[in-house]
Image 1 (tube, rainbow, N blue to C red):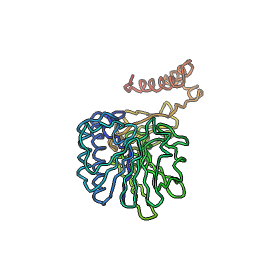
Image 2: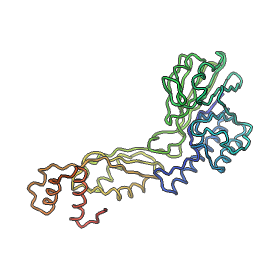
Image 3: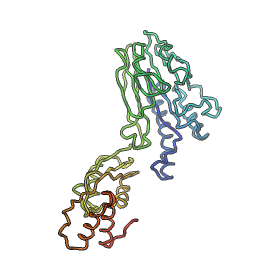
Image 4: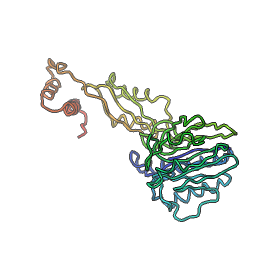
Length: 357
């Protein structure tokens, strides 16, 4: 038996935190298209079932267009069973607006639900405030079947309404514990028999979700469960650190950023974090830098964590207007951040450049 383990698709997410309105609409559509591509892969590779370990949607209120499209996608893959366990984001039982679920969609409730397919049992339970304490003792799995368990929550040492106490699931005849809630791939031994894994999300939505995103394929054979993580996202989110200490001109800043981002796909969303030190001579025009880098990647964000570097003696004997200006600012009682901002703006003005207020 072959299964796909996915989770945390967060369909219908607004996607407006960093993106323009047009980009947010495009990215929102891409998340839906990724789910459609997943269904196509399941059909083409003759996968028996798709395990959705929670948070298929981003909230309990989903647009009718999105809900209907998701049902249509699953219905068109009629030869594949979809095992849908709701998470903390899509907890509403009326999320599909009363529309009848396709015949190939299986759901779970607040008590353990078991689906047996030959020698394989797929079990799942949706956590709530009533069952989180008792769920570990009520799980009933036989040792002579291959057992896959779906849960959605945070891995923890102790149980809770949103916690999964993994130690409490050891010795319960679980071969694969399919988890949702954590948006990065993680896999570890559960006990001598089984493993647990978060498959991560299918698509990253923010820069706290950088790196490869995808799903896990399970190949279940008598006495053996093999797993493999499959990268699948349409776009990656990457964070790149750029040390600008040795940069003076804007061209050098651009070159440093491009070198740090070498090998990243042009279709990616890239966050450049500037670090190191800069001086009054550094041409740190972030608006221009963002414009240039945006031509190379689908989306660019720049975060400036660099620090202003100026020793008090650097301009002590400079008789120019620039030297006098810098000494005046450095002698003021302002904070270091304010001094840096004033000096950079003043030098721009002295050079005849436009100063952004």
